[in-house]
Image (cartoon, rainbow, N blue to C red; front, side, top):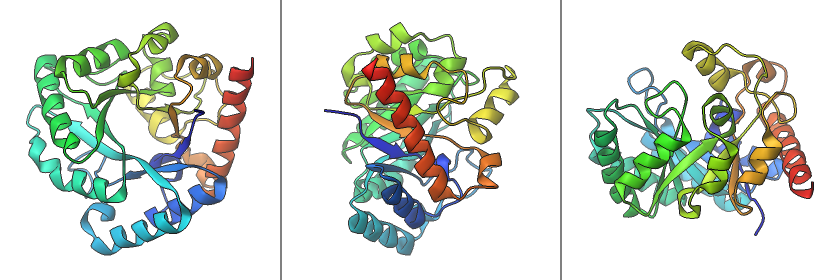
Length: 273
């Protein structure tokens, strides 16, 4: 089975869900990622897809019309004070959308407590047919693949996974050998993009590139060919490529199409070679 490709929320951050689904269909994606919870709780409101039944109904209709599936929903942040039960509505909406995976970030300095919270989250998500996928990011309490995998394994839940983002992988201490050695059941999807070869290594610099200035595959310094060869051949590849400068001169649908074209070119060349 070959890769399927998903259009991540941040790649077309300005498009409402229905327009994002249409863009995914037009560009040739198989799947889409949708955001319902804010990246920074308290800094912005929940997204209409979570709170507005009309938006949910319109999105479901668009998915049905286009045949596009939902890969992941986002984003759950696990903090020391997080009430896992509060995500039940989010999971219920995800189930109605036909989602498969939930993007999770770990913001708890106590690893044992984080693993416990992750386990509770996984058990709740399982009741809605969802996996929970812990993404490591160098500036967070889960800075690398080894830490993420240790937390997921400690939770002991079969629907727990590790989300490897090519950008965060490149900026972390993780290696391609570690990616290739991951237990197959712990990798449900990956995120793909390129990033500048020279970059500000401060937390603020890393965050700025991650959220605003990722590059099209082939335009940066990440070993994407090695990354493509290290992941399982049937892994869903979510293309997460927010670039605010590019968004000023190219609409979301065209950016989505270009991102898919460039990603497939890199992946196909890597596997052929």
